[in-house]
Each structure stands twice: as structure tokens, then as C-alpha cells.
Image 1 (cartoon, each protein chain N blue to C red):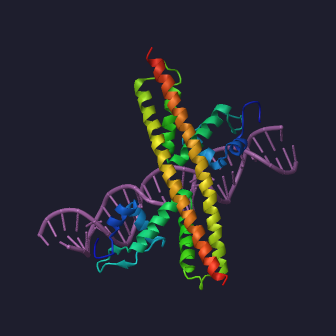
Image 2: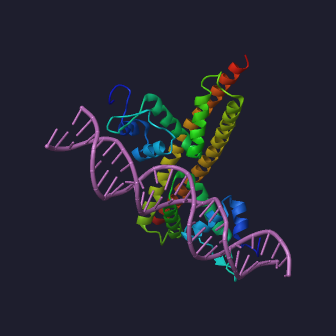
Image 3: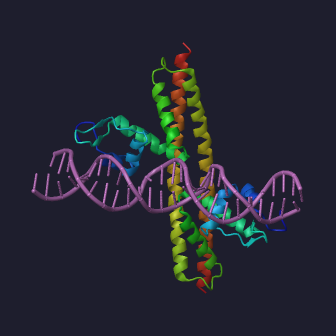
Length: 134
Length: 134
DNA sequence: TCTACCGTAACGTAGCGTCAGGGTGC
DNA sequence: CGCACCCTGACGCTACGTTACGGTAG
């Protein structure tokens, strides 16, 4: 904790589980821009910023591009107030929701396939090791 | 089928589910090199080659580099005959097996996190849409 | 000969990792 | 002042995608 709710990039990286260069990259691309900078130029992240980083981290394995993720988060921001929320924004938001569902299904399939490989490997090792024992 | 057990890159791409450029890339890097070429230079894949491509495809989501995958497949090849199989090769093979296990666990965690996001998104959309109806 | 398919070469892209050289902060 | 931490370029890397231009298969 640097000064009550303002974290430096190192602490953030530690707590979120992203590398410092990744976090800097996200800043450069405008995915997650720190709410403040110290007088000396250090990036200072608020708890909300950190939450956004966690959000990105969760979405990345679903093969979403950083641009899409940025767009999605902006949509969420725009619709925080239901009054300001345009129908169009809500529409696009649910398209993202559907995409997330699909990617999850795909991820499950990949996991299943990967476990197959694991089994395949284990059995291959076993038969080859057993043969060696004789 | 081009001529009994020899497939052109297009058919292979179709059946395996990898893009043509990906398959060409794998050839260039020596990951999966087609067993033959037509007299005119067309890549000709055998069923075994196609199997190797499927193997690569299954391992990719586990974040293995192409070089590692190549190494792994070579290890499998080298140990096909238990007599030629060195203890060292078998050792490295089981290290890969362990790595696969770990990556599977990680993948499951990522899937769980991603589903969280899905839920989060759906509920956000719902509350914001319902508010609009009034 | 036509047409779909394939070849290489070369450059473009996303998402970081990795210095190099130099301030910042406690 | 020291030492850990941070800054901005700028270049490197992986794993492809994308033309451009031309040959091949049947």
C-alpha cells in the first residue's frame, strides 16, 4: 500500500498475477489506464483499476483480443447507470455475453482433448517403461 | 483423397481444423513435415502426418511452444521401440506428462474464472434491461 | 485450356518480454 | 545517500495471417 488505496505497478502485478510489462502494455493500449500518476510519473492504481485488471485476466484465456475487452469494459461503464444505457449498448453487451458462453464451451472441449493427450502420454510411458524392466 | 492415403494441404486443413497457413507454418518450423511432395511440389500428407497435426492441435491450448511440442513428439518417436528407448528419453517424457497435468489444472481454473465472468455479464445485462422497462 | 488449388517470399499483427539508460521514493 | 522500484523508448520473439505473384492438378 503506497498511500491509502493507491498501488504501484509492482504491488499490483503481485496481487493480480500479471507481469509488470503486461500491465504497462495494457496502459499503453488504453485497456486499463491507471487513475493517477505520482508527481514523479509512477503509475498509481486504485482498487477499481485493479478490479479491471482482474477482469481482463479472466477474459484473456477466452481468446478475446485486447481491443474487444476494452470495448466490453467501456460498454459496462456506459451502462452502469440504466438511464444513460442505450438499447444499442445493451444489445452489444449481450452479444459479448453470448460470445463468452461459446468460448467457455470451446474451452471445455479443449480441456477434454488435452486430458486425452495426458492419458495417451501416461499410457505410452508406462508401456515403454515396463518393457524396459524385463 | 488425392491418391490413396496422400492428402493435399487443403483437405488436411479441412479435416483437422487448422488453417492452411498454420499447417504450412508447422512444416517450415519442422513441427509436422509432410512425408512427401508431389512432383510439382505439393505437400502430401499421410494419415500418420494428419495424426501428428491433431496431436499438435490438442496440445496448443495448453500453452506449449511449438518447439516443445516438436521435442515431445520426437521423444515419442524415439521411444516407440522400447529397446531403443533411453532412460533419459523416458524421463523427459514423463516430465512432459507432468507438465500436461499441471496445464490441465490451470485450464480448469481459467474456465471456472471465465464462467464467473459469464454470470457476471448476464446479471449485469438483466438488471440494466429490467430497469429500462419501467 | 480452364479453374481450383498449391507453392514460395515477404511483410504485417498481437501480445507480450527484454534490455538500455536514467529518474523516483522512502 | 543508498537501494529498491519505476520510467520511457526501442528492439526481439512467437505464432500465425495476409498479400503478391506464379506454377500445378486433373
